[in-house]
Image (cartoon, rainbow, N blue to C red):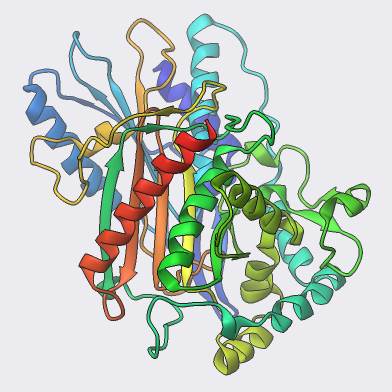
Length: 454
């Protein structure tokens, strides 16, 4: 009951979890049910089953519940606690539709459930969460996308020499968004410890994100044979108003004229805030690994909001203008990189180990996919572990608006002591063996860069 009360508290404070959608004459509208409605929580007792059977049942139950998420009536999130017996801690499964939750929201939900659970466990009175109003946040993002500041930035994106950026497939046109039935996938897991807050360089303060960007860009540019336009996922919660012409090379010069777009508390708000950003990645050439990593970081920081203006203009502010340019000169990237951290920030140094040889392409029936999630802090002698399964398919009316997919997407998922590399690609443009070699090269580059910079 304590856990159910904790989930009810988070459910009531996060409107995005209570969202649903309905069609109207003006298009699809997002609505929110009242907090008083019942919380989609249940408990399932698996204590009498063998461990392997428990794992299989949890996976099957996750898939079954995933299919019950109802866009038009809700709910778009469900919570299930599995009791695995006295010798194993129970597990909490949270299934959240991607249309109402980006990757950053998963950590928000984890922390808030744990916080509320701790308060209920110790008998303390829970303090009200400082959550920014979800509706207000979305309205302000829309306002910013159509603002005069963004209109000035529009010219910057249109003037870029898109035709000079390299592609992996010459003489073949890319598509706007890869249909699910033309989407292939190649995955690999490596034993490598990273941290979003780790400082890898003793002198230049190169963070792990810079290393990932540099290693992947090194592989992509060398494979494509030239500079590339690389799409990344920007945490829309950190968008800032930037005075000036929107294309100032050095953001430090305009720092005094920047201010947050979203209200205080947005970092504790669940929702889909991620924005498709584009950065222009140069070839490494004769630069050392350290020099190239610094150059990549400079390229990313030289564009306001690290290139998030592209996604805001493309899908919210001036979609028709951008679409015309797409049709004329292909104003879109071929490559996409998404970096997801699945563990709490840590200041521990980066550790480099040998690849464990495990491939996510072939998971045996005895392997529990839920085991790929990281460990979390225990909150009681019989603590629960939070396991998250999110639906990834784009919806026809949603169009994955803030994160359109280029023909080649690489997702790097960072856990406690491993890194997963997942490449999704258009099977009409790429061969599986070529993508597999590309993933292997990216894995090797990550080892090389971390070894050099740690």
